Length: 247
Image (cartoon, rainbow, N blue to C red; front, top):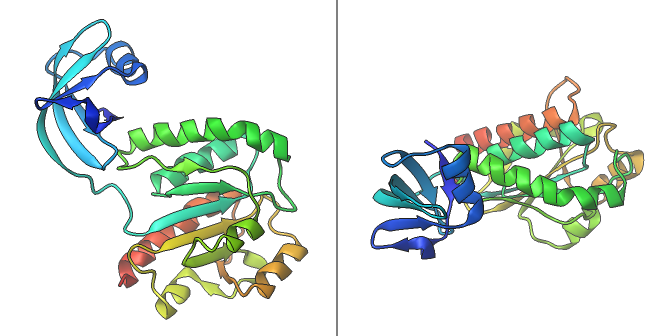
């Protein structure tokens, strides 16, 4: 069933009035939807609406609400990714998969081995936000995550926004995700930051920074993974292990 984000102020008399141009074009023009077809809508409060199209005009789609309920398409903790951007298609794939896996936000970070320079990264952030929006629609997420402005690892850690920070660095990793969560499970509502480096990994200077700041350095196993693969494996395993050890 097609899935679209709306605002609750579009609802009147148990009908959703879809007048914003992007959703209207997608429904009426791209999908060529017809009266009687179903739409799945979700508002800014995370309320899901199962609807049936009742009328289509030249600039509006009316959808009658048949059922509404709180969406369950979100994680019980806030999962953030800090990641050194990759080149073109690999980064687009990474952004899409992190969104599908429930990341609440992505922080592009400049690292010593980053493949892109600062100006290129800053120009691409609007594109990455659009990818996250489209991926959120496709996998029926309750909320659209955000790709934040370019930052550094040091700035993120000094912000003290996060309850847990995991750095994935195979060369000097201390433990696995399972071992870490056995010692200290992630609690519901916690803000968790996952840090993953560039295709060439972290530099010796960055390894020393992690050690000096006593960050948890984790491994994904004996295999060496490409950065975009490491993101999928890391986030997927954290979500899986949280379900085993959650408090």
